[in-house]
Length: 237
Image 1 (tube, rainbow, N blue to C red):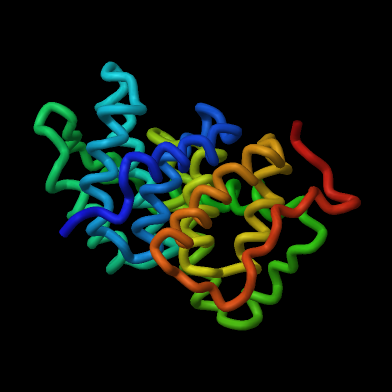
Image 2: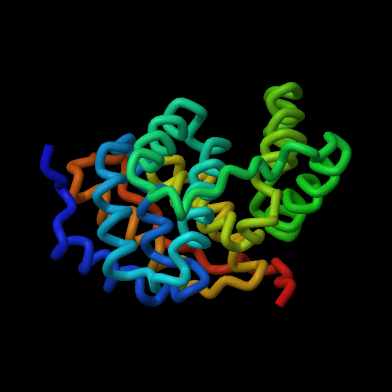
């Protein structure tokens, strides 16, 4: 089946995401978006084109590892099924010399992961006056425990491949793809509180929205604009 994402459209994605800079490369967000939007079949051709045209050859292996880690982290947002489909699709076309067979989380203890996850959760949400953590903990204590300790612990806060801001890029791209507007808003605020620029967030947001439009995805409501840091919030930068 021919890809819906031809070279001209991919070039337009690159232009759309240019303001996100090297820290938040547009193509990584697009890979996450394709997985979240449930178009894993578009990933192989897109990946090969990006490697050929947009990623310097010395960075191919490192960036491939980051893409896989991004999809892995997106599992905490889009679920195991979509992540499995996306990673298997990508794996079909990764050249042998770019593969990394390491299981990086294998030797982590629960205590290590949970402590690190708690710190990341606080870093993202703790200074956002519009976020009420008790709404989740009161709604479903077991869900809250799983998200805080397992998702934030083992999945999101692991930082040997993607750092905290790169992880937020992944999370926001995935949330946009599954149309979770409230969570998108909180993570966009949290990302800015921790050093990302409004213009960077807007740029990589627009990459996912442009992909969705190309693929004919209709969201329930218009995607929210990128919020500014709320009054009373204190930035770490």
